[in-house]
Image 1 (cartoon, rainbow, N blue to C red):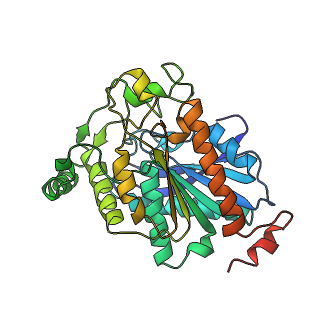
Image 2 (tube, helix red, strand yellow):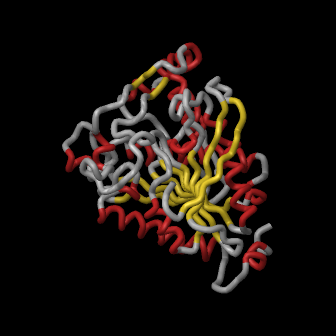
Length: 336
């Protein structure tokens, strides 16, 4: 466990995909603070889990109680016999997301900012749209969303996104859900992150392997169905900030190029579909940022934090209408 962090496990019951009992893990930075006015819930992407304490420290410096969720079969929540990150329906994450939010609100009367990266950004966007349609956004206490390079479309040739390909993928997702579409690589993006290679960050390589986890037909079909829903238009029901790199690079490029661009997604697709997330979106490209903008080199990372701070200034004052010295109860009286 990370020093200075606490974790709680949620039992989710039997896996609908037949891989035993599911659990999710909520991680919290520091001791619970009943007086906290704001909280952030960080949700990771594919081949990922929470380890980025620098990002948590930045939110804490802005007065946020910091939480992160390792989704079922991911990171701390992976169990023996389970296929890492495997699911055939992204909506199954709704249960643990709501359990996480309920645990946060039980600890304090905080407004909750959700922050999703890559596939996690896709997951939380669809979840918040369903929450809004059910009329439960205010009841859950969610008041904002930050997306860090959300996975809004498939990278690669246009044929991968065609209707015939999607139909074929749907069939394979039903018939051979655990068969592998793409095997792990030997380097690429992961080498630009971990300190044992050319990066500066330390994390568990069994939970976030350098070459990534295999991509299965079942998971990819679930992603494509979720992306199709995004393309029809969502409304997450809260103001949202979408951060991305200003350009993509090929993952087979040299080490220097991998350090200065998104080697995982096509940023033009993020730009194209960002308008489908909600009605109050702020989209900011970060020059030379990596796929995870907060794991970029020092310069682009500082620029990403600056953009986050600028948006948080608006979120905390103009949106939430807070003034220094108000109590959680005084603040919540203005948010029905």
